[in-house]
Length: 109
Image (tube, rainbow, N blue to C red; front, top):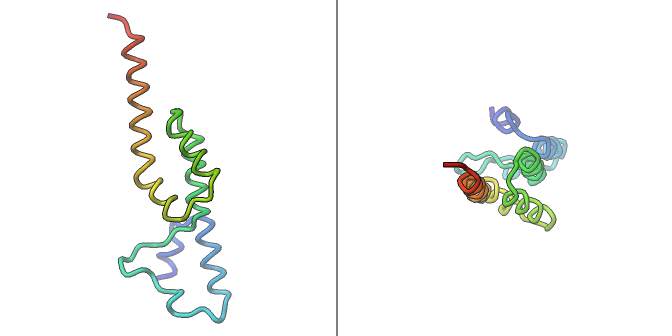
């Protein structure tokens, strides 16, 4: 059940990490255990792929620039996760405000 939970919906980076762990006959129980809160860990490479996918499908300059800047550095897994869970939505709001302002400025009576 644990394996199914980990692999169900996991990205390729996490799947490869799990496969490597199980191929290692010296893996400890601690390495195989989920965090106490039951969350499934994500591989940083999966988060990078998700950010690239978001950037490709988004039209606003603020979010796209921030994604490019983040991916050009060496962000930690926690930074990638925070960007995906929090920052991207804040930046989408900024892009939307800019788009709305352009519509209002260019609109007629």
